[in-house]
Length: 227
Image: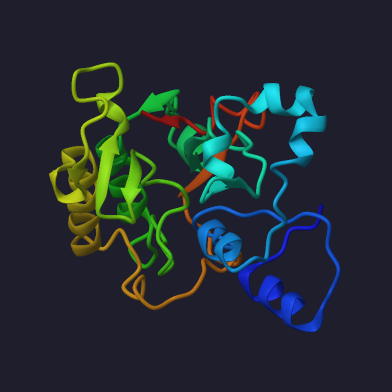
């Protein structure tokens, strides 16, 4: 299976490039659009000869179904992703003699940003590109684009399936308020809205990242999980 971007997929369709399978979801190679246009093969009947596969996915086939026909095989992929702060242990632990916590809230990052800024007034401890913070805002399930969501913090409560406007998600809005304050304090680069990526030559003490099952093993003491 070859991963194709939206541009590669559309170009291959126009040129007749052969492919067996491709990744599709709501944000890459849009499933509904491509299945509706006949770009994906109807595997509904084929699945009758593959009871093992059908049973392994059941009851989630609706995810790969459009107008009663199955065009894709749903997979769990990175359903269990975790978001991390990646913090400079040489600075915080060795130079400042601190012990980085294994878990922290987003707002609790501020003292670390302040510490670096005081020691490095000409630098920005939280350098952010225009695309935003990698995976950091995965605090809710997007139901309708970015605007109607279900906060993960409500899981297991009576509001665990309640859809709300994103502006009513206090955890998310609190993170945005923190970012705004940190921007005004000079912790975030002034060109955050226009710069396309964080240059590798820029040394920042705090970054974010997303990890999947197993990839975080042995890293927790340095890269505390966002809770």
